[in-house]
Image (spheres, rainbow, N blue to C red):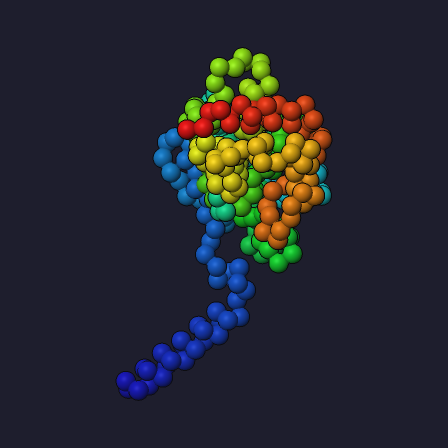
Length: 276
């Protein structure tokens, strides 16, 4: 009798193993979860549960910032997840690779129409690069980015966590230019840095992300790159230096104007005199 039971158990184990081998990797993988903390405690949401919410819609995104083409997604309006926002705060989107986008709440509550796109397990999105991962499982997309002046850096993908936060300059006062007028190029440059650079680069050792190098420690790029090449680096990084693992995007003129680059460089020069 014991031998018979043992044989049955072995057969069941073999069948289970065969079923696992037959299942696609997406089924066997752990269910992706999104962490959300809007000041009332951390919550975890599984992808399948989010896709079953009644607010989910199929949306069409023109000029997608990650894929650079028209895309269609199953998505939730972001407001359904984060609720009413304080307009003097930021909402922080942390990606699995350490990229951190601090998006002002006033933009999320404005005319840009932010949605959280959710990648279904059975219909995965395309890879961002050949052989690489997609923008999923969670990706912030905008239906009307032009109306709100949304930067490509404010389309975070591969999101792991969404949380409320004080504005970047409040949490890290060492990134603010000192003894300059409120309407000075350096002060305007801080805004350019916050919207377009802080998601990857810290400055003076301060910031939420560390994907790229610090922009002032040990030296500022304004000190070791000639200005024409620094401008080229901002517009098209590969035209100045290129390697396989490079992740820096270029900023076209319709995203970052020449005047905004002027302000950014003024800010970086100002900060060379404010090293800790």
